[in-house]
Amino acid sequence: MGSAHASGAAGTKIKPRILAGFSVGVQAFACAGAGLRGVGHARAGHNAENCGVTMSENIPVLTIDGPSGAGKGTVSRIVASRLGWHYLDSGALYRAVGVAASWANLDISDPAALVRCTFDTEVAFRENDLGDLRVWVNGSYATDELRLETTGAVASAIAAFPEVRSALKERQRAFRQAPGLVADGRDMGTVIFPEASFKVFLTASAEERAERRYNQLKDKGVSVTIGGLLREILARDARDAQRTVAPLRPAEDAVLLDSTGLNIDQVVECVLALVNP
Ligand code: DC
Image: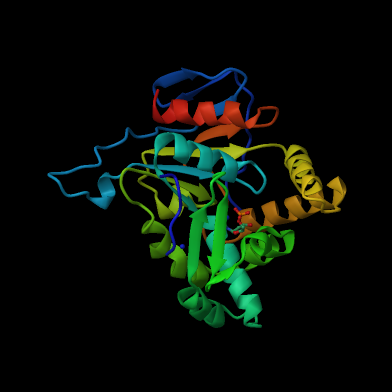
């Protein structure tokens, strides 16, 4: 479990505060060192079974939204695996459409062509033994291409088209399967699963995100500079936050978690404490 399956805003200014704990509605959780802050009420989970029939709306969803490089992917995958839930990497779907469009030499400023491409593109996800997500686009292995900074920039550009977002909507909702779903992206808690039981908005300072990305790329032998990565991250944040449709912003009932200075295990524990207080 915890694996994903094939199938698919100038918003509120985010001002995370560092607190030694966090609160969700009336509940308070101890979460050492965490910059986690409730901005509303997280609803309790529902029973997944209803008279033997699993109703999609009864399946719990945990949404983890936030800017690029905040660690959403890693945290979401570990949390999904610990809960035994499915995992949706919605950014990978936007990236996959971007890759398919570039393979087909499409004009990525043409929303009609992009919508056709979105419906035509098959995306298959599989986890390897280490729990890493592998992705195939139209039958071709595309994991490495999907992770490129240039692919992220194309994904961010095409994600600004409302037509593309709407073409991917149902595909993303189809990931909601028993016993539960962890959905990672920019608009999981605001647009795709507004009724989700648990919502987290994960941030980290742009400098720390650039440094984390730098270390990841350095480990892979890719030569980049922190300054260049910081510029790319800031540009992508601005584009994702300023688009008119589904801009990057926390849902009103999301819990803000600032992971600056926290390691992955600490963030995972904070998120799990939200689901299983
Ligand atoms: O999460 P990511 O970096 O893989 O996402 C790549 C781009 O896709 C991101 O810059 C914006 C877009 N995206 C989006 O608009 N909505 C989502 N739910 C997920 C990603």
